[in-house]
Length: 77
Image 1 (cartoon, one colour):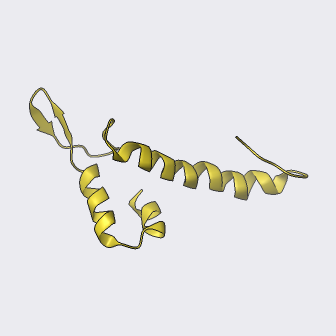
Image 2 (cartoon, one colour):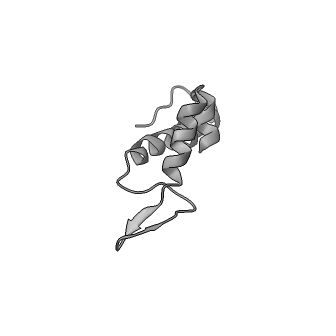
Image 3 (cartoon, helix red, strand yellow):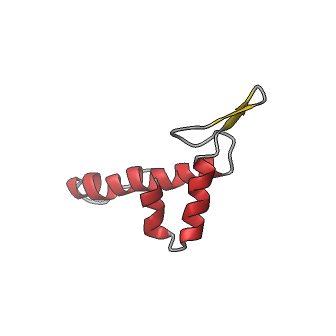
């Protein structure tokens, strides 16, 4: 995910901030537990990263794999 962001974001401080938010962990029963993967749900970062991921996975897949195989115009919504 950080490599995806690195293609578009040139400021290493922003990438470092996002990496820290991803490693932040969660608070359960008064104890902080470090997270190894994923983004904490409810975090301000969650919708941002999901949109970035969908861009790279869905949009680019459609434009590079599906659209060339179609005759005429192809869109998805």
